[in-house]
Amino acid sequence: MNSETRAPTIEGVSQTPSDDVSNRSGMYQVWMLAISLAVLQIGFGIITPIFPYYISELGMAGIELGVLASSFAISRILFAGPLGSLSDRVGRRPVLMAALLGFAIANVIYAFAMDVIVMISARALEGAVSAGFFPAANAFVSDVTTPENRGTGMGYLSTGNMVGFVTGPALGGVLAQFLGIRIPFIVAAIVTLITLLMIYLLVKEPVRKIFRVHEDVSRRVALRNSLARISRIISRARGSYGALGVAMFANFFAMGILEVAFLLDAVINIGVQPIEIGSFFGVIGIVMIFGNIGFGKIADMKGRKWLIVIGSFIGAASMLMFMISQTVVDLVLSGVVLSIGMSMRGPAIQALIADLTDPSAFGSVMGLFGAVGNSAYAVSPLMGGQIFDDTGSSAISLVIAGGVSVLGGVVAAVLIPKHTVTWEDENNKATK
Image 1 (cartoon, rainbow, N blue to C red):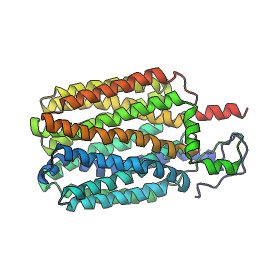
Image 2 (cartoon, rainbow, N blue to C red; image 1 turned 45 degrees about the horizontal axis):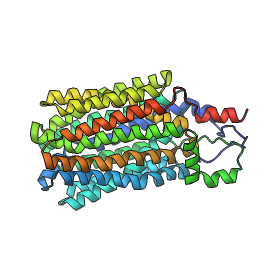
Image 3 (cartoon, one colour; image 1 turned 60 degrees about the horizontal axis):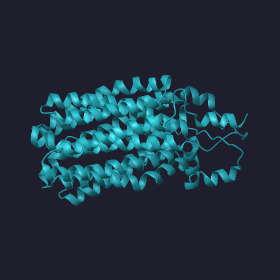
Image 4 (cartoon, one colour; image 1 turned 90 degrees about the vertical axis):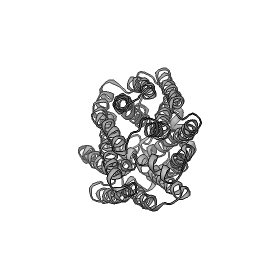
């Protein structure tokens, strides 16, 4: 189906020739995308327990692991906007499929890497292709849902992500423990190709909703993905968008600290093994599977704001718990608290961005937010790796991450209004 095919336009009315069909099948498409995302996340998660040991084999220090992680984020910053805009122009499905193919190639490069430069190059490629996949996936959900069920849809998508997050690290830990640290990369490439086939067979290109408010059609098309258009969209709810950007920055910042400084701390100072790291991430994922669904529904029923605020403070508390952890059990308990905070704010942040944004430009706006989040992920691994090299501990990095999370909660409490005027509400009001 051509995603740009629409019925004759009526000013101010959603222009989709098959809205009824879309409403009936939209959540089914979200489920199919969530299943595909779960399989992809297995590929991402398989390699999570491996990196601390891999860098040891290649003779890398903490700062070099930080550079490895940051190359992923920097690449996503550079490509998130263009690929988000591309998904608005050519469709979500082609971008999703191209990203999967690139991710499979990156894992093959990982498997045979013998020096740091090759690994960093593969990680940068992985960042570039993921910059296409995740904004397109979020934009897909926005296309096929409404404000009334969008939080639920984002929750399902996050749940698919977490199912893979549970399975991937556990599988990667077992494979690395018993078969060596290179085999999981080959498995990840195979799993990614399976995901590509699933997207091709199960996910259809959505018919996107376009709202016209007293604008000439040709002018709207010309401005669709321009900076002026994005600026105009953001200016109508500048405080909310700003708070969401800070909240997303805080979330990515914490993950960068955990992936580099804390995992090095856990391996060197606590002595955890690959299979234990896999189990740790598996427990986090299980909690988030249920949390994303439950809190996604709460976000639809009770609103987005306070889930973001409370989730930010819970995330900050988990950073302090990680700082005083001495055993694997301590790590798991800290991870459970972290996963509760993340599942509270994750679907709520994504749903609120979708609520505020013109559906025809959601890919572009989500790409912009991806760049904001990844700027945090570019900074925190470098900082965490350097601090670990200097101090031999992740404690200082975790305190900083907790402070950033608190800041995100405070800004959200102050700037996000209690009652949000959605893009659809504003368009309906303008056309009455």
